[in-house]
Length: 282
Image (tube, rainbow, N blue to C red):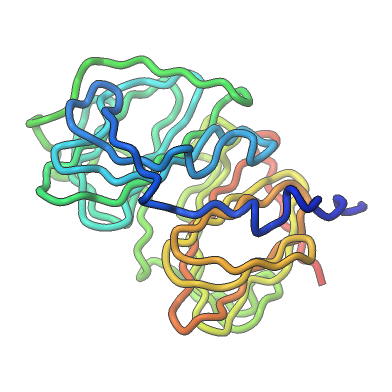
């Protein structure tokens, strides 16, 4: 199968990569929570960045006493992710403290919220995938989830991005050296075509080999470190806070050129439910 033509200059790889930029954060209230969020505007990624059903990825800072009020999505699935500290996550009216780096996926038709009860800001991401391309909905419940009873153990699904959970893989997808990898969430978690969330750590000098997907698009979010991404033969530098969208059939690889670990969260969204494919490319 022929590969897509190389990206035109207006859509070059370096220009496609989105960067977390706190100078573009704006303060606002979210879903009737009286506290504040400071979120990058425009969103880190939007629906048009992929052809599959990504709706947005927001990169935010949850201020003390702030958060996202209790609400439903009936045409979207969403996951709040914190990169450190801890926050109060709510799914279907049950609330627990979750320590980062972690997230809590919320399926369509279920309610969710998040709250920061601490006295310091919490780094935060919101990932939203829709059932229909470009279609968003929300139904607010008028409930900020402040001073609510806490379950000591969550009674909802959580996603943990802790390094001790990773496992070594030598020559990952034909790459160099031994990396650390784990599939944090698989397709059974989601009702939409959101397929997975992977956690990948590349030590200095290692790489993910060149590969492509016929039926899956991905977003690589750089949690920590720096390196180089290659997409369809074009390369660009990446750093902590960057988001790299990889579209259908694009040959891509990641390499750690820095001295610290390159830590990545990978969001996979399929063209159809249960479509999963990876082809190594020499």
